Length: 204
Ligand SMILES: [Zn+2]
Image (cartoon, rainbow, N blue to C red):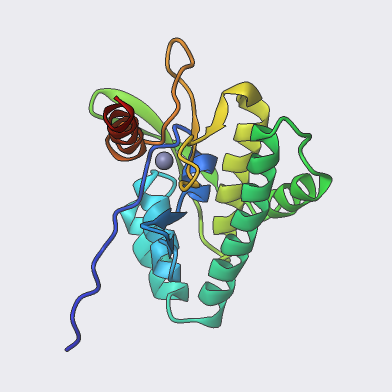
């Protein structure tokens, strides 16, 4: 029996599904981390963002978890994530959304089969999605829908990259004054404060 691998939890600092999806790949202590290492990771992520129910996830893993189709879907999802990262990098740089990103999103939107479903969650309603799984690549349709929401619903000026140059995380700034600079105050925000404090003391 091998050691259980240390689990890094998924990050939900993006305030937008598509940005959280891009944020499944990041840099930690100078090392690239990819939280979507397996098809199962992708399915787990979709459950955590309430796009799949636990029951649906079990069925999907049973159907495709150990199949080539599962691996292929994971690879497509990762390639899609690269396209989305480039797209969002361009948005944050004030440049136009590239046509190849629109084409990739439209291509994957065609995989979407199923229907939305409402669920009650701690007194509120959430719209989930019943995938009616026929094909593993339907999962890509869910990711494409998140990407299309970002383009259709979000103010591009509020899509931001963490100001820590070593950090690659994106977020949608929903603060009142639109003054959010960091993916997380406790991680990058604090680090920057400590550095500034150190600089002040050294120069003073
Ligand atoms: Zn950061």
